[in-house]
Amino acid sequence: MDFLDQVATSQRIGKVVKSNSHCDYVIQVDDSHDVVTPPKPEDYGFGRFVTLEDGDRHWAVGLIYNSQLVNPMFLNNGPRLSSEPDPMFTPDLISETRTLLGIVLVGSLANNGSMPYGQHGIPKEVVPVNTDVYSLDAETVHRFHCTATGQPQFRYYSHLLRSGGLFAAQLTQQVLTELIDSNLFTGADQRALTVLCKELSWKNTMGAMR
Image (cartoon, rainbow, N blue to C red; front, side, top):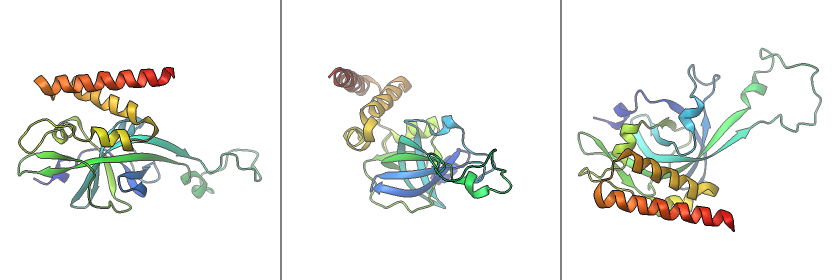
């Protein structure tokens, strides 16, 4: 089964418009001018797992680490109308207001013939412009954190701390907390995640006190 079949009913968030580095991409969120049913704010919140898909190809799995609102009219010192512009006569003005997301790539999904599994790390391929981006459901997030043999994994920890932007520590702690609460990991793996999460929480707290 192709992985695209797993995300066929997932919410499309937007498309790739640029990159800041090999594993740092910018996504333009769909709005009502692009699609009939645009994504809701909770579909692209901080720390949300997403998949980058294009036609029949899966490119990468990423995490939303930042957002930016683009409003060309902010601080515009040009002539102003006495009332709100009519949408019928100013379509370009309305469509220029956009929401952009920062996505850090943390791996990709492969398929062993029955179920997808995760390959953690920096993907080798460059994701093309205009590649579609979808939110990942809980089941696929679960599969991303499993190896081909079904063993739990979390191998992008250090990469996320280095490449997760200004909020990398908070983002990593949020991901760790959600993985612990999901009970995907058991025994020594669960204890190791708990220790990592507590250590990171302590560092975040002490850093804020300095």
